[in-house]
Image (cartoon, rainbow over all chains, first blue to last red; front, side, top):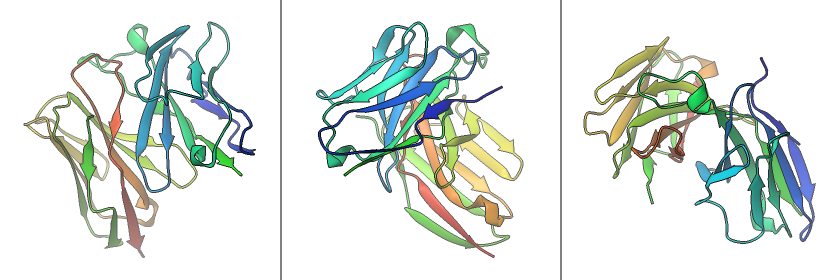
Amino acid sequence: NAGVMQNPRHLVRRRGQEARLRCSPMKGHSHVYWYRQLPEEGLKFMVYLQKENIIDESGMPKERFSAEFPKEGPSILRIQQVVRGDSAAYFCASSPGTGGPIHPSGANVLTFGAGSRLTVL
Amino acid sequence: GQQLNQSPQSMFIQEGEDVSMNCTSSSIFNTWLWYKQDPGEGPVLLIALYKAGELTSNGRLTAQFGITRKDSFLNISASIPSDVGIYFCAGRSLTGANSKLTFGKGITLSVRP
Protein backbone atom coordinates (compact mmCIF):
# COMPACT_ATOMS: atom_id res chain seq x y z
CA ASN A 1 0.00 0.00 0.00
CA ALA A 2 2.09 2.85 -1.34
CA GLY A 3 2.02 6.13 0.51
CA VAL A 4 1.93 9.59 -0.99
CA MET A 5 4.37 9.62 -3.91
CA GLN A 6 6.07 12.81 -4.99
CA ASN A 7 8.41 13.34 -7.90
CA PRO A 8 10.89 14.50 -8.66
CA ARG A 9 12.54 14.37 -5.23
CA HIS A 10 15.05 16.98 -6.34
CA LEU A 11 14.69 19.53 -9.12
CA VAL A 12 17.15 22.19 -10.24
CA ARG A 13 16.00 25.03 -12.44
CA ARG A 14 17.51 28.26 -13.70
CA ARG A 15 15.72 31.53 -13.18
CA GLY A 16 12.92 31.96 -15.68
CA GLN A 17 12.34 28.26 -16.28
CA GLU A 18 9.26 26.30 -15.30
CA ALA A 19 9.03 23.76 -12.50
CA ARG A 20 6.43 20.97 -12.38
CA LEU A 21 6.02 18.94 -9.25
CA ARG A 22 3.85 15.85 -9.21
CA CYS A 23 1.98 14.15 -6.41
CA SER A 24 0.12 10.85 -6.42
CA PRO A 25 -2.07 10.55 -3.32
CA MET A 26 -2.48 7.40 -1.28
CA LYS A 27 -4.79 4.83 -2.78
CA GLY A 28 -8.35 5.72 -1.98
CA HIS A 29 -7.55 9.34 -1.10
CA SER A 30 -9.35 12.01 -3.05
CA HIS A 31 -8.09 15.13 -1.30
CA VAL A 32 -4.67 16.66 -1.96
CA TYR A 33 -2.90 19.50 -0.17
CA TRP A 34 0.31 21.30 -1.14
CA TYR A 35 2.60 22.91 1.42
CA ARG A 36 5.88 24.82 1.07
CA GLN A 37 8.70 24.65 3.59
CA LEU A 38 11.54 27.14 3.72
CA PRO A 39 14.69 26.44 5.78
CA GLU A 40 14.02 26.64 9.53
CA GLU A 41 10.36 27.38 8.86
CA GLY A 42 7.22 25.38 9.33
CA LEU A 43 5.03 24.20 6.54
CA LYS A 44 3.00 26.92 4.85
CA PHE A 45 -0.28 25.92 3.29
CA MET A 46 -0.59 26.64 -0.41
CA VAL A 47 -3.61 24.91 -1.91
CA TYR A 48 -6.21 22.21 -1.25
CA LEU A 49 -7.73 20.28 -4.14
CA GLN A 50 -10.20 17.53 -4.77
CA LYS A 51 -10.49 15.78 -8.11
CA GLU A 52 -10.94 18.47 -10.79
CA ASN A 53 -11.67 21.14 -8.18
CA ILE A 54 -9.65 23.71 -6.26
CA ILE A 55 -11.24 23.97 -2.82
CA ASP A 56 -8.92 26.45 -1.08
CA GLU A 57 -6.08 28.33 -2.75
CA SER A 58 -5.70 31.00 -0.11
CA GLY A 59 -1.98 30.21 0.31
CA MET A 60 -1.04 30.31 -3.35
CA PRO A 61 0.96 33.28 -4.63
CA LYS A 62 -1.16 35.32 -7.01
CA GLU A 63 1.22 34.97 -9.94
CA ARG A 64 3.29 32.21 -11.51
CA PHE A 65 1.88 29.41 -9.32
CA SER A 66 -0.92 27.05 -10.30
CA ALA A 67 -2.16 23.65 -9.20
CA GLU A 68 -4.42 21.01 -10.64
CA PHE A 69 -5.73 17.59 -9.70
CA PRO A 70 -7.22 16.06 -12.84
CA LYS A 71 -9.73 13.25 -12.97
CA GLU A 72 -6.95 10.91 -14.04
CA GLY A 73 -3.32 11.16 -13.00
CA PRO A 74 -1.40 12.95 -10.29
CA SER A 75 -1.84 16.40 -8.85
CA ILE A 76 0.60 18.90 -10.33
CA LEU A 77 2.01 22.06 -8.80
CA ARG A 78 3.35 24.31 -11.53
CA ILE A 79 5.67 27.24 -11.01
CA GLN A 80 6.31 29.41 -14.03
CA GLN A 81 9.32 31.71 -14.50
CA VAL A 82 10.96 30.54 -11.30
CA VAL A 83 12.97 32.94 -9.16
CA ARG A 84 15.55 32.20 -6.46
CA GLY A 85 12.97 32.82 -3.75
CA ASP A 86 11.00 29.81 -5.01
CA SER A 87 13.77 27.50 -3.76
CA ALA A 88 12.14 25.38 -1.07
CA ALA A 89 10.83 21.95 -0.23
CA TYR A 90 7.31 21.38 -1.53
CA PHE A 91 5.27 18.78 0.26
CA CYS A 92 2.10 17.11 -0.86
CA ALA A 93 -0.34 15.48 1.54
CA SER A 94 -3.52 13.52 0.97
CA SER A 95 -6.55 12.54 3.00
CA PRO A 96 -9.43 10.15 2.40
CA GLY A 97 -12.18 12.72 2.21
CA THR A 98 -15.71 11.93 3.17
CA GLY A 99 -15.67 8.58 1.44
CA GLY A 100 -12.92 7.03 3.46
CA PRO A 101 -12.21 6.06 7.06
CA ILE A 102 -13.14 8.98 9.26
CA HIS A 103 -12.54 9.51 12.93
CA PRO A 104 -15.79 9.76 14.89
CA SER A 105 -15.25 13.50 15.11
CA GLY A 106 -15.36 13.70 11.33
CA ALA A 107 -11.83 15.04 10.96
CA ASN A 108 -9.38 13.49 8.55
CA VAL A 109 -5.67 13.17 9.05
CA LEU A 110 -3.19 14.27 6.38
CA THR A 111 -0.50 11.85 5.21
CA PHE A 112 2.55 13.55 3.71
CA GLY A 113 4.88 12.59 0.91
CA ALA A 114 8.66 12.85 1.15
CA GLY A 115 8.69 16.19 -0.63
CA SER A 116 10.20 17.72 -3.75
CA ARG A 117 13.17 19.98 -3.23
CA LEU A 118 13.39 22.78 -5.75
CA THR A 119 16.63 24.68 -6.20
CA VAL A 120 16.63 27.73 -8.44
CA LEU A 121 20.05 28.80 -9.67
CA GLY B 1 -4.14 34.62 9.75
CA GLN B 2 -4.01 31.73 12.17
CA GLN B 3 -0.66 31.07 13.77
CA LEU B 4 0.71 28.36 16.00
CA ASN B 5 3.58 29.24 18.29
CA GLN B 6 6.28 26.78 19.21
CA SER B 7 9.30 27.67 21.26
CA PRO B 8 12.15 27.38 21.78
CA GLN B 9 13.33 26.76 18.22
CA SER B 10 15.82 24.12 19.42
CA MET B 11 16.09 21.83 22.42
CA PHE B 12 19.07 19.80 23.56
CA ILE B 13 18.61 16.91 25.97
CA GLN B 14 20.55 13.93 27.27
CA GLU B 15 19.58 10.43 26.21
CA GLY B 16 17.15 9.00 28.74
CA GLU B 17 15.69 12.37 29.74
CA ASP B 18 12.07 13.35 29.32
CA VAL B 19 11.16 16.42 27.27
CA SER B 20 8.00 18.45 26.93
CA MET B 21 7.01 20.68 24.01
CA ASN B 22 4.22 23.17 23.99
CA CYS B 23 2.20 24.71 21.21
CA THR B 24 -0.08 27.70 21.61
CA SER B 25 -2.45 29.63 19.42
CA SER B 26 -4.50 32.79 19.58
CA SER B 27 -7.25 30.97 17.67
CA ILE B 28 -9.37 27.98 18.58
CA PHE B 29 -8.67 24.69 16.83
CA ASN B 30 -10.88 21.62 16.90
CA THR B 31 -8.12 19.18 15.97
CA TRP B 32 -4.51 19.16 17.13
CA LEU B 33 -1.85 17.01 15.55
CA TRP B 34 1.81 16.40 16.28
CA TYR B 35 4.17 15.48 13.44
CA LYS B 36 7.86 14.58 13.36
CA GLN B 37 10.11 15.32 10.41
CA ASP B 38 13.43 13.57 9.81
CA PRO B 39 16.06 15.23 7.57
CA GLY B 40 15.15 14.98 3.91
CA GLU B 41 11.77 13.43 4.60
CA GLY B 42 8.17 14.52 4.93
CA PRO B 43 6.39 14.95 8.26
CA VAL B 44 5.07 11.78 9.84
CA LEU B 45 2.06 11.83 12.12
CA LEU B 46 2.77 11.00 15.76
CA ILE B 47 -0.45 11.72 17.60
CA ALA B 48 -3.84 13.17 16.68
CA LEU B 49 -6.16 14.83 19.22
CA TYR B 50 -9.80 15.51 18.46
CA LYS B 51 -11.43 16.54 21.74
CA ALA B 52 -10.67 19.29 24.25
CA GLY B 53 -9.01 17.80 27.30
CA GLU B 54 -8.10 14.60 25.47
CA LEU B 55 -4.90 12.90 26.61
CA THR B 56 -3.47 10.35 24.19
CA SER B 57 -0.39 8.16 24.31
CA ASN B 58 1.61 6.45 21.59
CA GLY B 59 4.45 4.46 23.14
CA ARG B 60 6.79 6.91 24.85
CA LEU B 61 4.83 9.86 23.49
CA THR B 62 1.95 11.54 25.28
CA ALA B 63 0.01 14.52 24.00
CA GLN B 64 -2.87 16.56 25.35
CA PHE B 65 -5.44 18.84 23.76
CA GLY B 66 -5.85 21.88 25.98
CA ILE B 67 -9.29 22.54 27.40
CA THR B 68 -9.28 26.07 25.99
CA ARG B 69 -8.69 24.57 22.51
CA LYS B 70 -5.82 27.01 22.11
CA ASP B 71 -2.91 24.85 23.15
CA SER B 72 -1.44 21.38 23.16
CA PHE B 73 1.65 19.74 24.56
CA LEU B 74 3.73 16.74 23.58
CA ASN B 75 5.82 14.77 26.07
CA ILE B 76 8.55 12.34 25.12
CA SER B 77 9.74 10.09 27.92
CA ALA B 78 13.07 8.29 28.19
CA SER B 79 14.45 9.87 25.03
CA ILE B 80 16.60 7.85 22.65
CA PRO B 81 18.90 8.98 19.81
CA SER B 82 16.29 8.27 17.12
CA ASP B 83 14.01 10.88 18.70
CA VAL B 84 16.20 13.48 16.98
CA GLY B 85 14.21 15.50 14.47
CA ILE B 86 11.87 18.42 14.04
CA TYR B 87 8.57 18.27 15.91
CA PHE B 88 5.67 20.24 14.46
CA CYS B 89 2.33 20.93 15.99
CA ALA B 90 -0.57 21.45 13.60
CA GLY B 91 -4.15 22.52 14.06
CA ARG B 92 -7.35 22.43 12.10
CA SER B 93 -9.96 25.12 12.64
CA LEU B 94 -13.64 24.59 13.20
CA THR B 95 -14.51 25.14 9.56
CA GLY B 96 -14.70 21.77 7.86
CA ALA B 97 -13.35 18.29 8.44
CA ASN B 98 -11.11 18.53 5.38
CA SER B 99 -9.94 22.08 5.80
CA LYS B 100 -6.26 22.87 5.79
CA LEU B 101 -3.84 22.25 8.65
CA THR B 102 -1.92 25.21 10.08
CA PHE B 103 1.58 24.34 11.25
CA GLY B 104 3.90 25.78 13.86
CA LYS B 105 7.52 26.51 12.94
CA GLY B 106 8.70 23.36 14.67
CA ILE B 107 11.15 22.51 17.43
CA THR B 108 14.43 20.84 16.52
CA LEU B 109 15.26 18.22 19.12
CA SER B 110 18.81 17.03 19.66
CA VAL B 111 19.56 14.05 21.90
CA ARG B 112 23.07 13.62 23.28
CA PRO B 113 24.07 9.99 23.80
